Image (tube, rainbow, N blue to C red; front, side, top):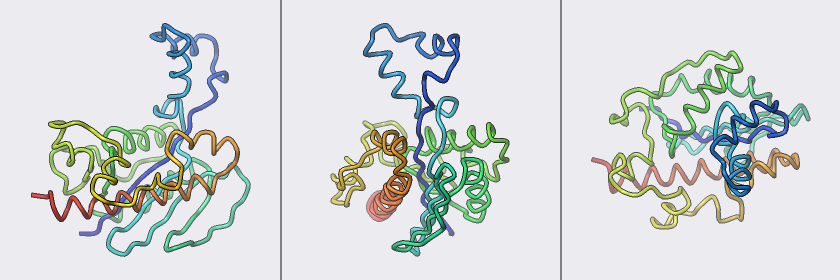
Length: 222
């Protein structure tokens, strides 16, 4: 079965770019200054208040992949590094390239993809008027089309959820966070125009997810 590991990186829009009514709506349930600040920092988690800046795809059988990323028109040329091709474009362009490529695979592998990556990709695609080529949000309890490792490792919610980093360390897998970067830093890196650093971080997440999938497949899959 042809399969591919998928991971995305997202950033939130500037809170001050919204009109007054929208700002009030977003802060509707925030009672304290800390809660208001937290809400502003969480805009990257929602497809209506954030955008996709990186989409990574890795074939776990060959170890080769591609990372599509936004460079805000800087014009970074397409290149390959350590088996990963890096290709820049606008959000619409990278979404189009993703959907065109992902339809060639029979199975996708994600970590928390069912509740984050795939809904985010599908809604951002709709906003960008990009037609999705596959529906990976079908029957949850069949991993043959979409293997969400967070579903598998929690036995579909029967046990506590942990982060990708925590699972990796627990199973003796090299974590993508060991180089001092985690998802909370992506927004600031992107603001500082460190587009390639965000793309490289996504590639490391892909490799960690691949290793976690292989561990699950060997010791936990039924």
